[in-house]
Length: 341
Image (tube, rainbow, N blue to C red; front, side, top):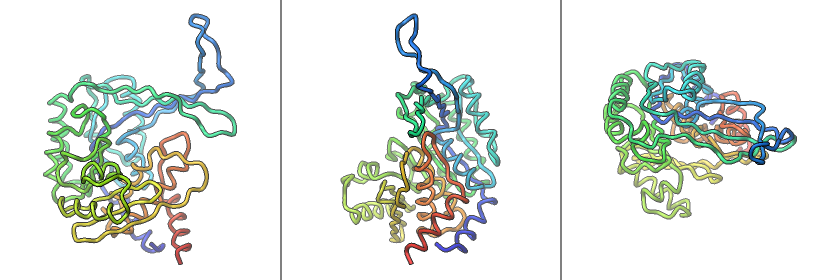
């Protein structure tokens, strides 16, 4: 991709309207100073003193953060949080982002706020080290009245948005925002770009644009996760033709594959690492950039190149779930272009 194409594609981002249906989480980071460790008088156990607390949107909120970083004109989160302290933090963090419209984001007493609490040990001159995480989740099915509100929001947004991103983050089926009934309602988006991703795999999803990793493709298409690149391409193409929508498969250090129903297949390698990395959030950055680029008229390969550059930016951000701005993505793309000449 040359500079002119980069500006032609990304110049449309400010006019895009993108909705995100999914499980919005609170990422709460507890920064621990090990030099301040104490021993509890009552229990005799070590006391880890927290010297700073950071809270930011996680899960589907990580995709939202990346869309904000790209300068998308209007972003519509469709999901829920609990009417609790974590929900207050999450909603406040989302509302603080520019271009985000909260009309379709619910706050309810019937759910807890999905929270990842991440203690980070900070030692001078060393990357942050994450200790055992403390998670808060919902363990019961999402109430039907909440499903109804999400379905109504999706119907309303179908004719107002250029793309929809669907992210299922929960481990237990039917406990989050992307329930069976909500998935079935996505037929109203048949004329728009819809990219779906799920940490549990996309089996049971309607035919949409699928984004997954190699292990998820293996489970869905019956190929080995360590298959040769040509076998993965063939499986992705077969699935794209079956769904009549594109399929994207991330391959860690091997990059990403994109397949279209018309037989077009592209593979873009990952960019070389430039020091220590943390892969948390890379997949969500890929999803956000694929959706934005395709909605803005990028070709399949152009979308993949943008996504790989964004992933490279994110994995070099340590101790946080990072984002990639256009100012960070462009130099990597231009360097890659120069290196290939």
